[in-house]
Amino acid sequence: MDYPGSSDNCPDHPPPAQIPPALSKETQLHITAVGAIGLTGDLVYECDPTKVNDPGYLATKPRCNLGAGQTLPTVLGVMSQNDNIYIENSPIKAPDNLYLWGSYLSGASGKGLAVENYSGRGRQGKLRLFGGLIQSVDQLRGSVDGSGRLQSGYIETYDYDLRFADSALAPPNFPTVRVFDVQKVQTTPLSFREF
Image (cartoon, rainbow, N blue to C red):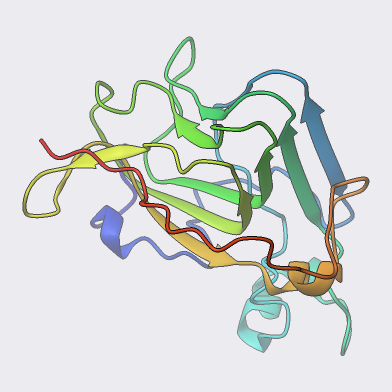
């Protein structure tokens, strides 16, 4: 399924109306597992944090009007202690043009946000992550041809949720760091495979 028009023209904010919110305005949620976590659908907030000061947006979503200077409290954290966070292919295949909002953390060495069977699932459009991504190793989430056209899985776009800056807002009991200290500088190539 694709949204009206090309997947490249789908807006990042707000998501298309076909995507219902997964978290209400009042929700602050942290999901943790020791093992793998599987994602099978869009995870977006009722109110778009990038639009809560836009009068046009608030006219269509009056519940999102927090008043002047208020920060949207909605936040999601998803953390796997020892494995990947997977965008699933089986038994339920995640939808095309996936929207994931929140902070995603894979806590083990060599793990990250991965797309299950990324090379055999067909073209699925864009994976739009709004929030944060903490991973040990960048996982393969799609494949492209020599011209940069998507062949399978997803092409990603990332937009950092500025509410997470300096741990000003975080999911409940989510690991945070207020001060960063450089221990070692090391060049690490991102994962890719040419076909």
